[in-house]
Length: 282
Image (tube, rainbow, N blue to C red; front, top):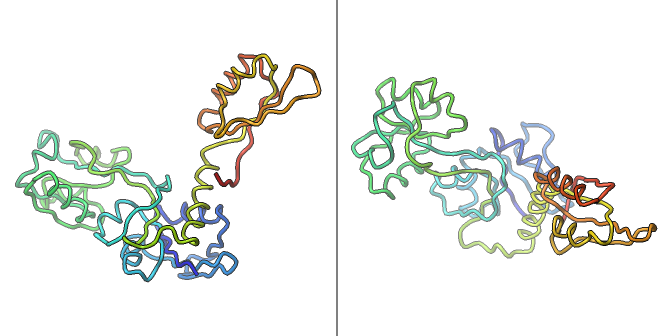
């Protein structure tokens, strides 16, 4: 039975459970549940603190885990990313008072406050910067005002909270994070149960990214239409009862669907429909 770690709270928890449900796995009904068994899929889920998941997976006690890329790197655990999941995206940046520094190269001799000591220490070392790192749990924006540090390093989304604290982002991003699937370094990623799990999640990712598009077009315009909707291996084309017309079906990126419909209509395609994809295997 495959043993999988899932975040029990925070921004990773809800989207992870939703993706697993879409992939056909049972999920807990109560947030107090710390473990459930899905016998039909031969999977056992453990609901753990997101920060601890990479450590549990690296120990070999659990086969796979869903956590954040930032948490994996910060943990220093002997685990590796095997699949990005596309949600809980964030950017990790340095910030300080305006005029203090322009980038990481100006941080020599500084003290940096952060909740991600492992990430920051590694980034500073990789850039040859001699700076001290102070670990704080949350609300690091106040560290500069209280004199604990000259610089902070934290997750930045809009930057509003930093500006409200009188701070500005400096330099290039330290890293970009998102939810990922992790596996112990050296573990067999080709194991059939692991591959089946990954295929299911990949199917959800594709289903969320594409829609199925159907339309009718004149046969003489078919080459133009196929150029607009090439599909994955090629569109499905069927003759219609009305001579000279064909029906076309192809997967298209959902973000481009409206533009593609406009382009198809412009070359004479009609009855253009899009349908959501709920699951797939490619």
